[in-house]
Length: 455
Ligand code: PHE
Image 1 (cartoon, rainbow, N blue to C red):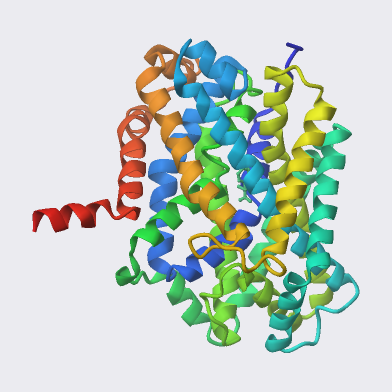
Image 2: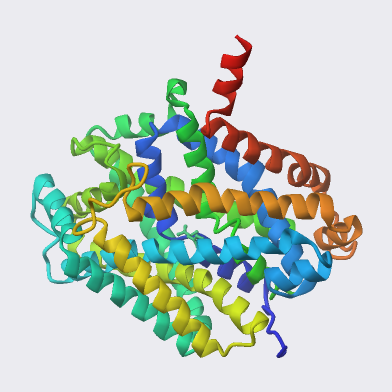
């Protein structure tokens, strides 16, 4: 195997992982999931999932990746020869391709909205017209496929040219600007009439909203948003150097990612109530609300262009990390050339992405369990495959891996005094795996079934 590069600085580590984590998951998916599932109670459970499942599983991925400097498959082979746990890498690869496919459709919508902003078409319409605008985009087979293809083309170009480091550097510069822009938009939203209703919706939990689908939704959203359970962060950690403090980095990544999601909620929900929209609109929520926000802001034309450019960069650093899982696997396990692996990855995503784009129009009648191809890809990957992957990785680190290696990784060979070590190990070993299984059982109605047997 060729010499593997390493991140030179701590900033490099955190910035690259945050680049993967922060994306459409925070700004598009979080508000829509929170809206569909009733707001405050969802957000509370989401935060619990980040703390009790998210941070421990990030650390588990980091420990495996950094202790071996290898991709998931070889890493597990090295740590536990002959163990079946290495098959988790296949879950990761399949999930990463599924996510890349539907994610590129949404990133394609971002490109169209950027285009519409530039030509001045995102200004001066009624809420009704914005809603129609979104429907006409997703309803048009050729437009959705075109933008999906353009986005995947950009992804291909960056990976193919090997300039992802460059893109990550640009993105590291742009991310703080995105942060500032989001803060500014928050202030703007909080000043809207009726803003208080939106804030109450987010922060006053209505516990009657708690249901199996809501809990599994919150868990799936936490895994999706943290890029977790598909060995993406494991692959990134295989490039970390020995000085990287794993626990601290994991905590910072989780906090920053959650912060961005909450900011997105504070931007969207006050506006939802102010413009008389429905928080339960689903995937179209953000696309219908944002243009309304921009147009009432002074200088909205420029704000919207800046916002969609930044969101494009946030998305592309996330899709690069998804492709990287597939590419590292093919190049390291099958000695395939990087170019070939990239070509195959993008070709598959293009075919599946086209199906996802068409599932809003020509293929909208094709459904399974009442879900279109797009919804199905999203649901199966985020809510089932990522938590299942997280379960396997946590069990591996908690029960199979040599304890000393784990402790050495957490403390950087005894150099760091990690006061939270015990609770973290406890969460990796017990809390995360048990919670994931209990949530799965809850969703399939196991507890209802047991109670009908008992009573
Ligand atoms: N976490 C990314 C986001 O929030 C999406 C992602 C999922 C990236 C899985 C990599 C792997 O947009």
